[in-house]
Amino acid sequence: MGLRLLYLIFCRLLGCLLLLGRSTAVSNGEILALRHEVAVLRRQIERP
Image (cartoon, rainbow, N blue to C red; front, side, top):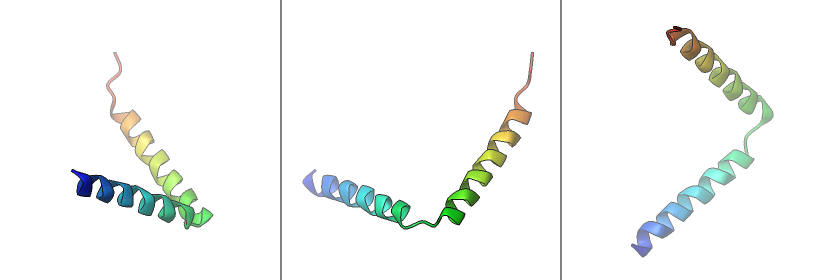
């Protein structure tokens, strides 16, 4: 149990460090990709 908790904490800290090290261009690219996914999903919703 303790080992699993340490592993999860380590993964969270590593993820936070990776987010801090990103450039703004990478963040902007990810935002554009997510906006595109949302637009595609909105088109797939059937309207009554």
